[in-house]
Image (cartoon, rainbow, N blue to C red; front, side, top):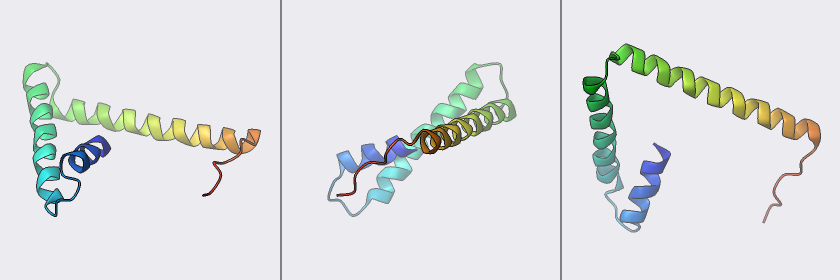
Length: 80
């Protein structure tokens, strides 16, 4: 969803109705998920379970990388 936010900021940098753009882009995302479920042999539960499993693995990898960074002593970016 983060890339959707970036796209809507690029499309309407000074607009006050960014919520509308985010809603339209979110509808496209839901449409993609619906079409994926319809055209593949997986059910909605399987797709969502796989999605949550991948998200969990990404967060775990991020936590490991952050712990490694602290252990090795990689300096943080300098504050401006």
